[in-house]
Length: 352
Image (cartoon, rainbow, N blue to C red; front, side):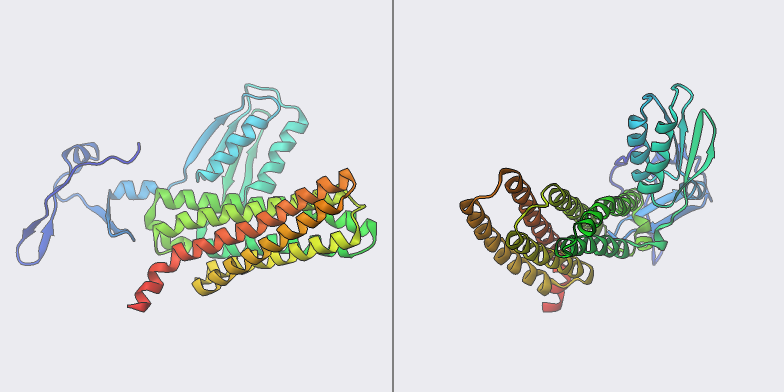
């Protein structure tokens, strides 16, 4: 059942120091509340109180389970639903495979998705007609700030390796490294889905904020956007690597200029990530200013590139790669702007 407004209640004072408020009759009846029944009262970070029965409080800590029926023999529909259940914070996901006949390759796709997309997930039971997945990871083992910085560092390293591949000289080395970078996108996705799972849990239970290293529910919304920005930086890095693989004949001078822009965009991105984690509005402001200067340089480079002329295939790859470099910088700016959102109240308090 979703959240319901049970109406306004007037606070009464009993004796010299005791304040009371009546409980909604409908809720009392539904939960079998009677005189002397104990209830849990939890103070939430936003100033509100959460009241639950003792049994209800225990029940909330039990595993959330869901049963998903397979309907598509190619496993695509089942994979999407399973990943959605993971993000929605289910602890046990039961897959009913009895109504379709899966080919071995389809089951293998499901196993690979669990391994590469669902951090902390284990297949604890598997037969011909069912599969049970349990998620064992707990939030205090990987709080949001640590998860975010790990994602950002992985994306930064992917950017650095694209530059290394382009400057390596040897074509086999270049091809192998760019291919490896493309495959590493799954590692960032895995952490992104974990972060999405944590944030779903926070939305369900604000009392768990401290388990994730947060003090304010508003910060969870900023983290959701920040995670998405990092995931998009990873995607654009993959896009750059793919386009470079398609066009090995790019002139050295053009390649060097592209890698210089990518290096600067990567620096803007990781500095923005650090400013977000550390709460440095001053650094975030500097990053935004430098991103504007980089954007102007990239526009000038693209203008000169188009005027100079390039073979059609190389031109298409360079233009797409440069667009992704621009987007990496822009996502860094987006993260810096989130730093202002999260920490402006703190800085204003210091000024007072």
